[in-house]
Length: 130
Length: 250
Image (cartoon, rainbow over all chains, first blue to last red; front, side, top):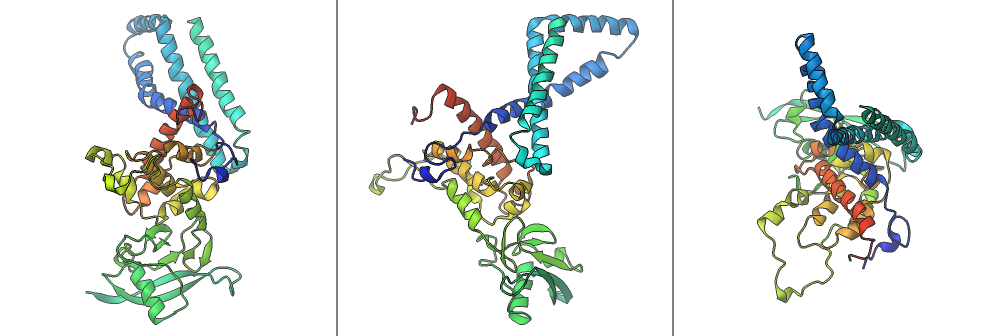
C-alpha cells in the first residue's frame, strides 16, 4: 500500500520505530505530574505544614506521616516522583543535545534515564521504610 | 506625509559564480509609509541594481514566497512595513537554516523532500468515484484540522526553529503540522503510513517545544501545538504496537 515504503528511513521494511516515543510518554506524563502536584506538595509540606506553634506542627507532621504510611499514598507519591524525575532527565538530555552533544544522543540515555531510575528506586526504598 | 525622506536597506549579497563569500550592500530608497520591505527591494531592483535577486509573487501574504530575515527575524517581506523600522536601517537576509542559492533566494529542496515525506494529501484505501458524491464532513470534524491547513509553506517556521538548524533528520514545523493536518482529517485513512515516517528517530521527537514556529507563523497556524498533539498520537501508536503488532490492524 505504501508507495514510498522502499525509500523510507530504515530501507525496505517498516521504518525504525524510535524508542523516543517511550521516553517522551514518560516525559509527558511527568510534565503533568510536575505541573499539577509538585507545586501543591511544596505549598503543603513547605509552607502550610510548618506554619504555627511547635505543638500544632508536631501534630500535623504526625498526621502527615500517618497518611504517607498508607500504601495507596505511597504508590501515588512514587508515581509523581518517578514521572517527574524522568520528565526532568529527558529535558536535560535534550538540553545537552541542543548545546552540542547531539551525536551522543544515544549514549546520553544511560546516564540520564539511569539517574532517573536510580533516584526513583531510592525514593521507593525511602517510602517503603515509612 | 506619504513620502518622507529616505530609508537604508542593507542587503545580503551572494552570487556563487563570482563571490567567494557573502557580503552586505547598502541601498538608499525613498521612505514611504505605505511601503513594505518587499516594495523597497523591488524598487532597488527596478531603479538601482537589477542584479539583486529575490523571490516574490502575490504581495498579499498568500503565496508564501517572499520570506526573508528582516533585522534578524523571519518575516514575509510583503507584510513587514517600513514604518515599523524607520528611521533605522533595515537589514534583509535570506532565511536562515537554508542553503543560499543567490542573494536573498534559498534552496528549498530539503524542505520539499520533508514535505513530501509526510504525504500531505488525503490517503484512502478505496477511492469513491466522483459520481458517488463527496466525502461528507461535519463542522466539528473540519475544526479539528482547519487551522493547520492554513499553512502557505513560507518556511518562516524553519528559519525560526533552532532544532531545524541542529538536526537534519528533523522534519520541521510546517511538514509535521501538515502531516498532522491530514491525520486529523476525518476523510483520511493514511495515519499509519505517515506515522511510520513521523515516529522514526528524530523526525518528530527532535522537537523540544521551543515554540518559535508558532510565534513567527504569518497565518497563525500553531505548528508547535500540532507537533505536541502528533507526539501524543505517536506515543499511543507506539504502545499500541506492542499490543497489536504492525500490519495486523491494517
